Image (cartoon, rainbow, N blue to C red):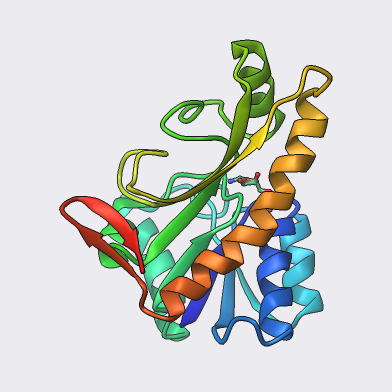
Amino acid sequence: MNICVFASGTGTNFEAIVNSIKKGYLSSKISLLITNNSNSGAAAIASRNNIHLHHISRKIFPDISDLEYSEKFLSSMNKFNIDFIVLAGYMKKIPDEVISKFRKRIINIHPALLPSFGGKDMYGTNVHKAVIESGMKVSGITIHFVDEVYDEGKIIFQHCCEVNYDDDEFSLQEKVKKLEHKYYTEIIKKFEEGKVSVVNGRVVIN
Ligand code: GRF
């Protein structure tokens, strides 16, 4: 697959995917990083690995229409013949035109077990804090398709970890990140192998 990663933050998931390509575990290529923050860790990872970076944000295009704004994303990805999008800590809304052009070819990872602990403000340590405060004994990761409603696309894969009494949001985040780095690449591999399909409204991995 010819992948475009969207990322805004430190980029540890992005880096884990880059490393699995380097090791030959994945056969895809990451041709482009789209970010809304060119000072992010993700941007630095792209430049260290000679991955093209496009900075697209409303701050640099404040006056164009929504349609023209989505064209910025689509024409960037067209230039590189992108056929799959991986969101890895992208903090902005994806334009609907991009989602509909890449239907079933755009995935996200969320640091909790959706449909709980998703939506507005559920990012970073906020999520883990909310999980701990709820008293839940397990948390984990959710990899899902992206559709027009935030954090509500069909669930592709989940994996749990325990929430122990002495966990705080930071230790839980560390546990969850380990799962993210391991399983995001594994699921991308399933897409490479054509093993992910939607049957009767549910995702099946063969
Ligand atoms: C991850 O926890 C991911 O689940 C969420 O954003 C975070 C990104 O972390 N969508 P990083 O920038 O990859 O370290």
